[in-house]
Image: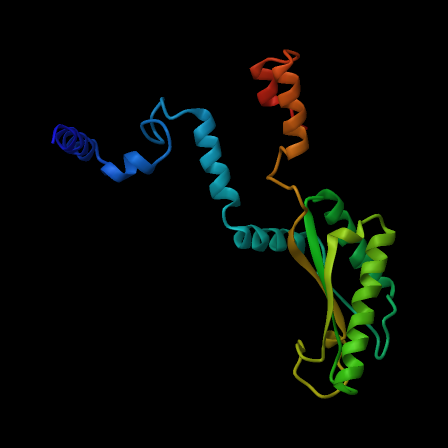
Length: 214
């Protein structure tokens, strides 16, 4: 009975402070996000979860950044998987963005127009995707970052026509996800591990551990 009275008293006090009893039991340590007792570490942890808690949103944002920096699509001549000058220039821009963003993995999808059989166009779309991957790899992009290479054949035309259409003869590159072990911008697991070992060994202080990164 005494225990129930104590819980009731706690619940009353919590409700007067503007939050629920369950919020107190299940919420993060500290008085609240606006309190000086909340703690920098807890605040940063929650902010990180907000930033990376929705991978789909993060990938959409990266795709927007990618398309703003480089063409995501290259087109091909009829019945060809060869890259012309315009395609190579577009892919070089993709290479630059990929090197600036080493944490991301990409998917490359090939397409064809509707001239020819479905089976042939599936194979042609795949050749186009593989040509793009080969070019990116020769420019220094690891093949492990280029996954889900596939063909959609003639099934997803940009222009709905049965005739020859260059805009349908294309390969599209997009962000698929993050590299394995990626834990967020500014500090990967390997850097954190090295800093921790140096800190516990007394080689650096807390302040230095917090700012070192690069």
